[in-house]
Image (cartoon, rainbow, N blue to C red; front, side, top):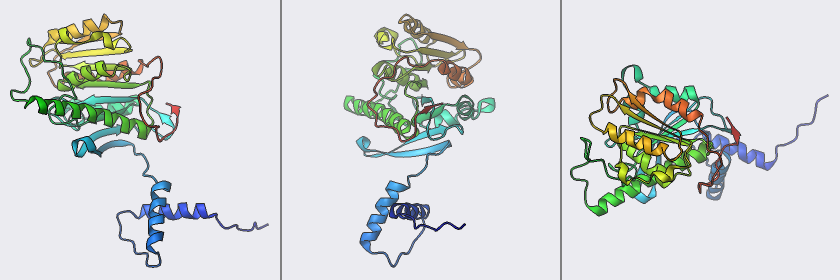
Length: 318
């Protein structure tokens, strides 16, 4: 028996039209029968009914960084295992002093080439690298130890410029964490922070300033002055992995080791590793799979508010 065909409700028709219109974005479309008011209404419906779907894989992103008066970039990798409704852990990687958001992903060479992408896929982490602002190390205000070869920029600019760059670099990192957390509904109890060289200093700075955000951290080949660092603020971390390349002559191994010891004194499960045969920019790449394994077993004991807008995906922890 043939069932009568019922006409679709107006809401369904509008959604279907909106989806068709959205699919045609980027092409010239002539709708001579539409009035101006109809086009305005249709445009609003498109934005409401047909959002751009979240993507997986390696992505280059831009967002409007209003405080800096310009757009800023970030690099993002989302494993193929992600799906709407699945809350994956996220790792934030801070680049070194002269790098950008692409450096952590692209600077590995030889047998380590692509290690960030392949490790993110293997261990099921969303990985994001913010750009920061200028040469500021993601807001870090702690000095470099005198005992190491690299002492920082010879001419960093005026005090006012340095403060502005620091503030904007810190804010950029926080903006990117919020953007990705909201879009992909990442698990706030499994948010991890790591960085090498200047990114290590940024990691230590942001870990002390926002300790409630991170489940665990990893800092490599980039110490701050241990005598001036507030180690007591890290007591809530579930873990810290501190690395130094055996052949690194740029950063101070002694200072990195002291940092690890003093973090451990706060009751934080801490590992220090001198990575055999590796240099200033290679030790963290070589150890990345072990660092991700370290992160996997560290989960915050209680969820805390991070003043973020609600995420746009679902709520199944994966």
